[in-house]
Every structure is written in C-alpha cells, then in structure tokens.
Length: 227
Ligand code: CTP
Ligand code: CA
Image (cartoon, rainbow, N blue to C red; front, side, top):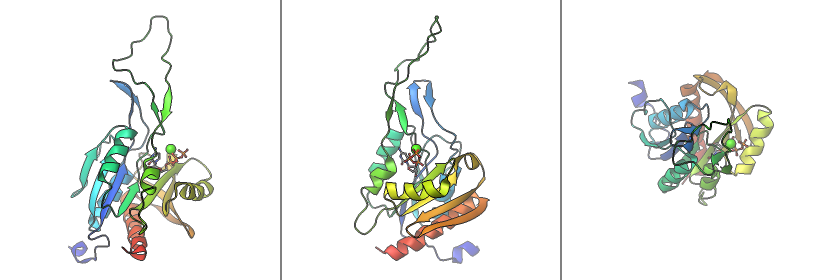
C-alpha cells in the first residue's frame, strides 16, 4: 500500500537487463557454463519494475521465477544473448549487463554426442572468443547518453583497482564490482559502484536491497543526464 504512494523513479523508462550464466555447447548433451545463479540480475529486474520501468530481461539458464510484470526472453549461449540484446536495443533508456557471459565458446561443437573412446584418448576442445555484449551496446550509446550502460564485474582479487580500470576499458558510466566467490549463488552480497568520481561501497545486504539501491543510483544519474 505504501509503495503505491512512493514516486516511481523509473516511470516511463525502458530498461534492458541480462542475467544468469550462459551455456556454451560441446555437443547436444554437454556444455560449459559457470556458477552464476541469476539472482542479482533478477533482483535488478524486479527493483526496476517496482520503480515503474518497462523491463525486458534476457536470461541465460536459471531456476528462477520471472519477476512480476517483467518480460523475459530465454537464451543459452553468449551469441544468442548478444543477438537477443541487439534485437531489443532500440528505444532502451538503460542497459544493465548483469549476466556472467562466457568469454569463450567451443569452436566446433559436435552435432552428435561425442562417444568415449576405447583407448582412453580425450576430445581436444578448441575455443574462440564470444562477442562482448556490453562493449557492443556501449559502442551504440547515443550522444544523449542512451542507453545508459551499467556493467558488473566479478573479480577474485584487487577489486578496487580492477573495477576502476574495467569501467574505463569498457567505456561505460557505471560499473558494479563484487568478489566472484562471495556472490555466485548467494542471497546477499557486498558491491562497489565505480563511476567517473571514484567508488562507493554498498555494505553487505540481500540482493533485492542492493538492487533497489542500484536502481535508485541509476535513476539519479539518468535524471542528471536528462533526455
Ligand atoms: N560481458 C558481456 N559480454 C561478454 C563478457 C562480459 O556483456 N562476452 C559483460 C558482463 O555482463 C559484465 C561486464 O561485461 O557486465 C564485465 O564482465 P567481466 O567478465 O568482468 O569482464 P571481461 O571484460 O570479460 O574481463 P575478464 O573476464 O577478463 O575480467
Ligand atoms: Ca569475462
């Protein structure tokens, strides 16, 4: 009831969010993925919807329910996620790249299940690099600053240094940093926001609380940018 009377900070805004892991096939029954649960991306989608935005969630494989009022497109591979994002990009005010996108895919996935060999020899997998979805979206940012791009970085060390450097390298206004093994699959997290003025630490909290804080930070910043 109270929420209904609160001003909606993203009313009239369209926001595109990626979430979850990607799955890169080796053959029709096997593949390579990562430990992302999708919880943070789904929490951002829910928080953005609560804030009045029209939300499109492009999701890798997860075990999560679609948040109320959120439109969801399911994908598996990074290439599919890239294509779904590029298709939906027109008219988006914000892009939040929460997905743990595989950096590499298997170059020649087998069309049939790979059989175990009798002599103990093992398959030789070759890899190639996936497209960088966030970089591709950032490269399309309009002069007015849309879509406003927010990246996530899971590091295992030197978060302050790597986070700031990654924001610059990706050419994005806002990057959210966290420590990979302290977030994947967990219900709460500690995050650090990196922007052009430096960094701000958001203390440990559940992911929905952090997502609401992040959404509020994003809406403040796009208000400043103004359409
Ligand atoms: N990202 C993406 N597409 C990729 C790889 C990453 O969109 N192919 C996005 C992620 O969703 C995240 C941000 O880029 O928002 C940073 O991802 P991260 O893996 O931390 O950065 P990389 O540039 O891939 O660098 P590295 O893994 O070597 O640290
Ligand atoms: Ca990566």
